[in-house]
Amino acid sequence: MTTPPTLEAYRQDLWARLDQAITTPGAPFQTLALATTFDGQPEARLLVLRALDQQARRLTHYADRRSAKIAQLEAQPRVCWLGWDPGAQLQLRLYGSARLHLDDDRAREAWDSMPASSRLHYSGPHAAGTPIDDPAQAAFAAYGTHENPESAAWARNFALIDTEVDAIDLLHLDRAGHRRAHYQWDGTSWQARWVVP
Image 1 (cartoon, helix red, strand yellow):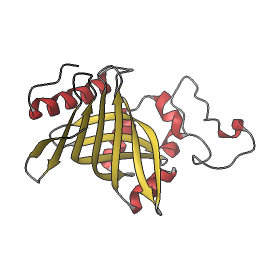
Image 2 (tube, one colour; image 1 turned 180 degrees about the vertical axis):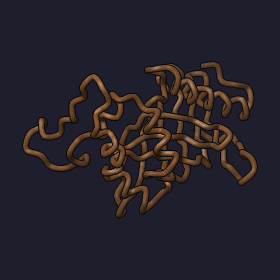
Image 3 (cartoon, one colour; image 1 turned 135 degrees about the vertical axis):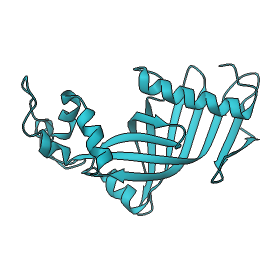
């Protein structure tokens, strides 16, 4: 990666990479690690980036509302997203506040636009992390050639997570000299500075 010459260009390059992650299968940053805290314990898991709104500083991800992360986000909405681009040797950390959408217009719009094959992932009979005796007990429902009538029930398992980003930390590893940039939203604009890697 050729490091952009200014802090602003460096930040714009990040948003372009995040945008590419949505439109290009297998692109770096398509899957980001979501870090939360709950009851004094750290938790992390990988989620697929589904949508991006740079103007609103918003990242969108999908989740099963029965999963532990939903309760964690309800109790403590402050999160950190972590990503790594091995080709560019670029690490990103995005900090912000998560907002859950459960059965509201935004969640329904996302659900309605989702392919039937993707809806299948919300058809499992148990919440993630439920103890089972056999992996077959976690099987998703089967689809026929038409929309399954249970789809409406599965929609109740769907959650949309929006994160409003208010801080960004970028670390670019380079043999010629590592670079690290930090950005903080002050309510009207990004305040940027170089920091020691």
